Amino acid sequence: MNEAFHLHDVYIGHNNRKSLIDIQLPENYSGQLVLFIHGFMGYMNWGCWRLMQTYFLDAGYGFVRYNASHNGTTIEHPSQFADLDAFAENTYSAELFDLHQVIDFIENKAISYKALHLVGHSRGGGIALLAGNHPKVTSISTLAAISSIEHRFPTGDELAKWRVEGKRYILNGRTLQQMPLNYSQYEDFLENKDELSIEKSCREIHKPTCIIHGDQDTSVLVSEGKELANWLSNALHIIQGADHTFGSKEPWNSSELPSDLKMACETILNFLNSLRK
Image (tube, rainbow, N blue to C red; front, side, top):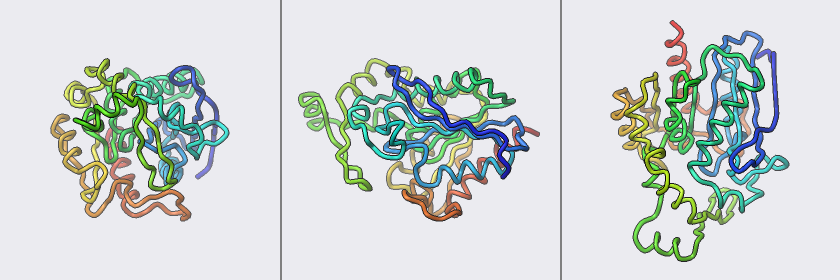
């Protein structure tokens, strides 16, 4: 891969919080630009996302990665959850706002493109679908995407406890950090329920989509992928034996993509190439 352009910069996200963005174009840049959105408790350097970037660069595609403004990382520590207060304040609306800010950033930096293709993993796939009708977006591809935001929240006594205490915690199994979530995240969802309905967005999208899921995903069940495909009137690409991260993990010390993630990348690349014919 011969690099023609590489910008590692800062964009302004939700609540004017600064966060990192990485834009890379290969020498044989086709004008096709992929914009990648990471998932919950993720970040742009997690696991194999850099190798995914290289995969698409080698195919002549530009590639953009960024950290959601309130994902818990900082500019100084882009691959660590160093700011749990910011993580606690995150909302789905904030992540949707961040994506719009990133698209504006690309425009403001005069990064030329013929087509802009969103690719989102897990929660990031849901955000990609919510932004699917953005006028600058050409297509949407998802990897193990969620089909509902509402179903991510607790119910019953657990929800009541969260409301009373104002904060709940989720263990990060890798870092062993107790990740805080403010009740304001749920309040934001209630206030923006229509805008944050993935089903509604899917039914209104009139752009090419590619939905990919592993049948061994225990974090976001393949049934959610089937729901998305149904709402989009599209086929679901199921990768047999693939888990939620398609074989990747953090840290990833190999220079090669895991076979399941490579298969997912090939599926997306074939889909994107088909749009150019």
